[in-house]
Length: 125
Image (cartoon, rainbow, N blue to C red; front, side, top):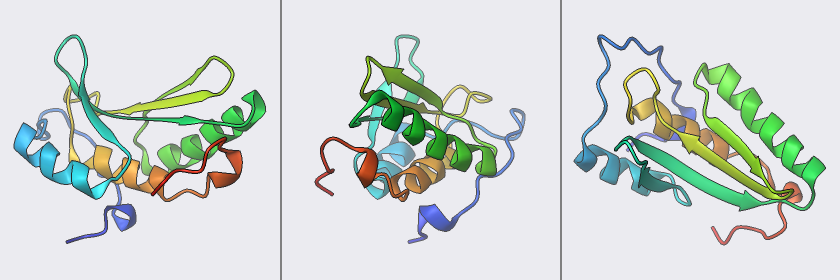
């Protein structure tokens, strides 16, 4: 099984790329521990994860580290700093209105970041 964190996101072309099936997403979600498959109100499948950070400034630093990875991959998640210490990230491929392997690659890369010094509670995994 390939390590998703060493793969690169591929450019999206909405005519060539289609959202993955629920079955494929349910297989890949097992390779990105801590992330959840969610469906929004219009039925779009997304990857979601949240963290609690120590301070507002640490939250901004967290988002900056994620933004650097997203920019390097050319694949941009929805980033949220809710309240002063709740970071939430939603990932899906906007061009196809659903999930592609790119989303799982980005989730794996985010999970691989050294973020522990920013978090209020160290993740259990």
